[in-house]
Structures are given as structure tokens and as C-alpha cells.
Length: 327
Image (cartoon, rainbow, N blue to C red; front, side, top):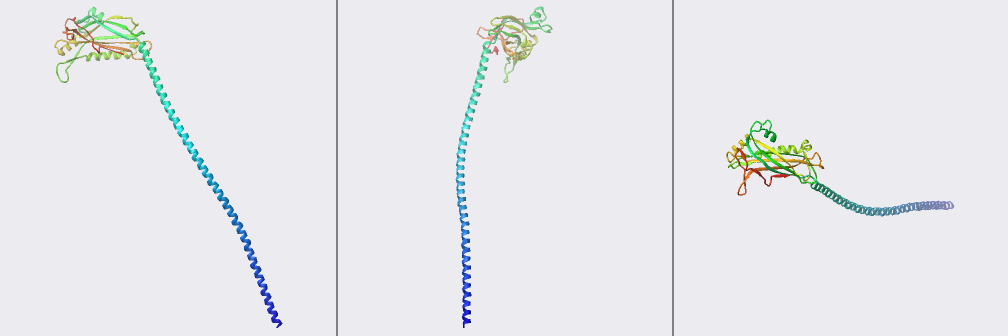
């Protein structure tokens, strides 16, 4: 009995020891769980702190980014305003430059105008008047002593229609005229049938062609710009000029004339000269002229046809609106 009681007691004690050990184990595990929980809480608390800190930094970064964006917008607005001002300044500079160009052109034009006015006001101006002193005479041989002296038709092979004219030159400008040269000649007119038919019409085509040839060549030649005479202001000079047309040309014109057997004549010529203060290489100033030869009529007009025989004593030099051209 005692042994059974003792066995029971031993079993009870063993059970108690198991319970105590189990309780201790449970308590240990519970304590470990508490410790782990504390560590986890600390870790989570740290992470939460970091997350809060990171969130704050993010908020700060966002705030700073917003500030930078605002500042960038302000800077962009200032840059745009500066660009607008620079554009306005550029536009004003362009306007000023254009006005300066206009002013410079105006000043240049004014200077050119002033120079031209000075040139026109101070340059020489030569004029010429003509008067027939020996009428047109036909068929005289060109080799007589008088003709040789007057007309210098040395070596001419046929009779000529000749005329002598008194030329009076006058410089009405303010300075001397240099290298004054002159040329003039008499020509029978040409006669052309108009396109619609009818009588032939007199023209000075051949005479003007010869004038353009001689005057154009001597206007720009080096020789003509450095030869000739001097003509002082307001001091008229007179010379006698002789001229002649071959009788073969005169008779040919009379055969084509609308008034058979009669011809009409023109006298053409030019004067060239230059001023003392203009460029030596510049073209000479020039006066060109063309006269028709005709006899005055009682009605007030004039008649230009003559029979090419003997002396045409009634012919005078007829002026028209286009008699003179000058530059």
C-alpha cells in the first residue's frame, strides 16, 4: 500500500515537474515572443520614423521643386520681357538705321544737287549764231584758188555746191571754255516715199547720220578733249566757215525730189568744249544744230526748193524749235 502510495506520489511529483517545466518553457517562449515583438516594434518604429522622415524630405523636395518651378517661370517671364525689350530695341535701331540711310541719301542727293548747281552756275555755256555771207552756188570747180583757200577742197574731183557762213561764238557762262572745236556742212535732203504711197517727203536722214558720226566721234575722243581754242566769257569771236556738197549728190537728190529738177538743203553741225574744273576724261559739252535752207514767202512761210544752177541768193537759214540741242 505504501509502495503504491509512493508510486502515485512519485507520478504526481513527476507530473508536477513536467507541468512546471512546461510552464517555464511556455513562459520562456512567451518572454522570447515579447522580446521579439519589442525588437519588431523598434524596427517598425524606426522604419516608420524613416518613412516619416523620407516623407518630410519628399515634401520638402516637392516644395523646393515647386519653388524652383515658380522661380523658373518668373525667370522665363523676365527672359521673355527682356527678349521683347531687346526686340523693341532692335526695331528702334533698325528704324534709326533706316532713317540714317534716308538722311545719308538725302545728304548725298543734296550734295550732288549742290555740286550740279555749282557746275551749272559756274561752267561755261557756249552759244553760236550763223549768217550766210556767200549764197549757195552750184557747179563751180573746186580747184580755183579761192576755193582752195576757203574750202580746202584740195584734190576734189568734181564740181560742188558751195556756201560760206559767218559763225559767231559767245561764251555766256562764268568761266572759260576750253578746247572749243566746231564743224558744219551743207547737204541736199533725202526723199522717201511714205508707206501709204504718194509724193516723196524730204528728210535730213543722211545729214543727221553724218552729224552723228562726226559729232559723236569727236565728243569723246582724247584728241578733241585736248585741242581747239579757248573762249573767254562774254567775249564773242567770229569766223568764216566754208562748206560744200558734191554736185553729183545734189543732182541725184534733184532727180528724186517731189518737185522734179529742184532740191532742198540743210546745214548741220556741232560745237564741242569743256570747262576748266571738270574731269578731263568726261565727254565734252556739245551743241548740235540743224538749219533748213529756204526763202521767205510773203505769206509768212518759207520755201526750200531751188534749181541747182547758178547762185541761190534768196536762201536763208531757217530756224525751227529743234534747231539747237545743248548739254
